[in-house]
Length: 69
Image (cartoon, rainbow, N blue to C red; front, side):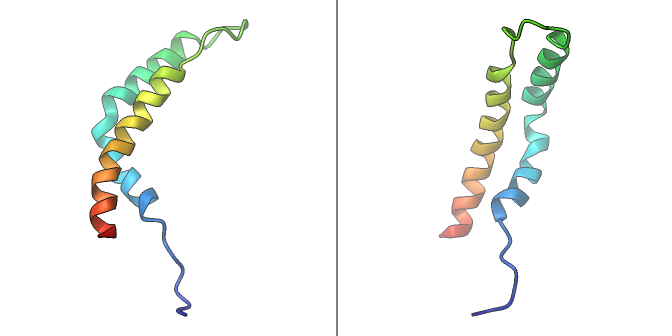
């Protein structure tokens, strides 16, 4: 067995995909700013957060599974 440290390729690919999902990130940030002062806890930005990560995951999936073949 090798002494080399195993590197998670998904993390690296996520960083390369983030620039492609700027629109979703800005929508999430705008939502977070809108609800900043909400004390009730009823407002949230879960949808925008998931949209952002879905964009990244979709981008990563193609590249990651190509590397695994």
